[in-house]
Amino acid sequence: MKAKSVIKIGGSLLFTEDGELNKEKIQRFCQIFKKMNYFGTHVIVCGGGKIAREYINTVRFFHGNETLCDTFGIDLSRINSKLLISAFKDFAYPLVPKTMEELSTALLFGKIVVMGGLQPGQSTTSVALEVAESIRADELVILTDVEGIYNKDPKKFDDAKLLRNLTYAELQEIIIKSSGDKQAAAGEYRIFDAVSLQILKRSKIKIRVMSGKNLKEFEKYWKGEKDIKCTTISD
Image (tube, rainbow, N blue to C red; front, side, top):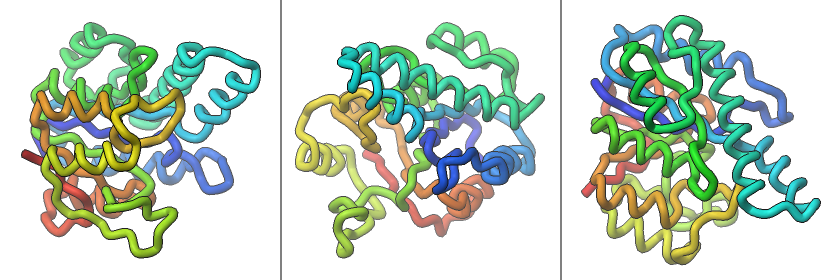
């Protein structure tokens, strides 16, 4: 267990395949923290997930602009954060920080802090990186619906290969190859985009990208085990 860590969890991981809130999984996620001898500084950044994208697509149907779409994503990520706070109970700071200044205040209480998006045009992955940079985190863990970063989309290609280790330069090459240097649109899901890459390059934070579907690998990570199926990104 790291003394300072940031965990980014995709909002969709809080739901079942049928679109219902996965109470058992949320409870297990919180228990992974509670079972350890808690110490240090830990921030969880929660995404908006599929439900946020549903709202965003509907706003676009009504010809709403991208800034408005972003605010829906931010609001939904904060609702997901409130849900995690309710599950953590006294282990978590009771409010969702909406700015970096509010985060600084929350950290003074020595509890787990859960937050979502901060401002339009910024993905929750970028938020997680900014937070990790701010608190000088030992590592950032990104929980997603795949086992890490692949050489191509594993949902489209059966022969996609999991990349166990990446440098920042190699990650940049993958991002540019797959999506160019454009920033992700509101609600668009990418593990990394051009903005998050720039924060990563300047902060030089070590990142582990792993599956959050059954939380098995995350629990192993939290226990300090070394044989973890994930992608490690470092300089």
